[in-house]
Amino acid sequence: MPRIEEPPEPWRSFFADVDSRLSEDVQLHCCGGFVAMQLYGIARTTSDIDFLGVVPNVRNDLIEIGGKGSVLHQKHKIYLDAVTVATPPENYEERLVPMFPGAWRRLRLFALEAHDLALSKLERNIERDRDDVQQLARAGHLRADVLRERYYAELRPNLLAHEARHDLTLRLWLESYWRV
Image 1 (tube, one colour):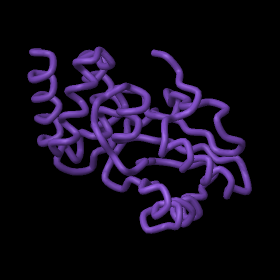
Image 2 (image 1 turned 90 degrees about the horizontal axis):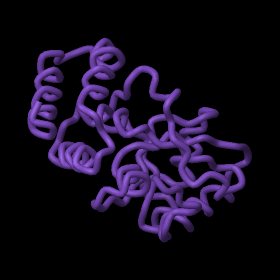
Image 3 (image 1 turned 30 degrees about the horizontal axis):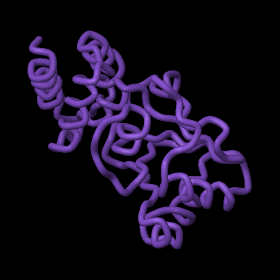
Image 4 (image 1 turned 180 degrees about the vertical axis):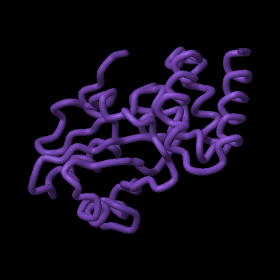
């Protein structure tokens, strides 16, 4: 997959403005539609950059700088969104993929690997999430065996409720997108 040095507008200017307001190096663990579009080439729209984690933990500072309703949101019409309804696989941090390396002085974006991205959508499982997973599968970014293995080894043990529902969701995805 080719690496893009910088994202297209308005993302480029937005991240440059965020970067200029940072006082230290920050790693942002991105997920959601922004990653699906920019890293995996999925055709969809979004106006936010979902993120699961930030190192060091300057989450509140980032939301103040570029979150919904911020000056940068008003200027660029996009915003940072700290995800609260997503459980990524346990070891997702070991598989993070750099996005736009070296594009900014302090800001470093990292994206969920495709299987981790798909599994982070399993718990919510709304139509947009299913569409993303289907497109990732059709584009060849996902393998059914890896998705299944990672779900049972790294995600299912951490889902505290609705185990049967999540098992069913995975089974339906596998049957629908791979005819397993």
